[in-house]
Image 1: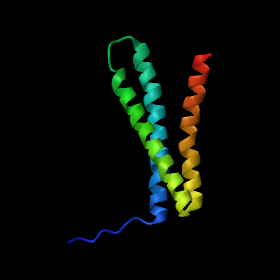
Image 2: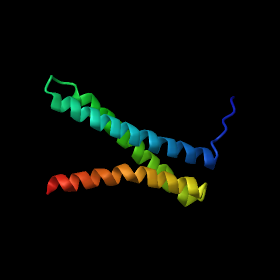
Image 3: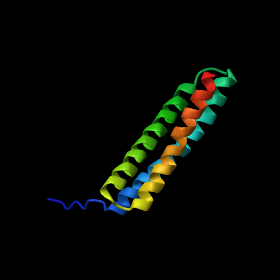
Image 4: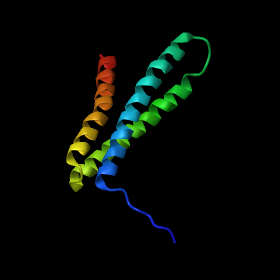
Length: 103
């Protein structure tokens, strides 16, 4: 029988913020590198970068969920709000790029 200490509200908020920052950095890095590999014309290899991009996207969406749950529960509202803002930035950029590509 072991002891499990549930993370506090601040710890959850910091985990969400770390996931948002890490996911955004992973998305940016894999996007730029993946585009370079795809346009290089030297062969395959861009699929792995696309996978890393979607892994970063999953981290960002999970962080956004952490932030929303933190706001609803009222735990560390400032960190939850900061997590929502940091997680929303890459999502807004994706929408802007997608809309620009459609026109």
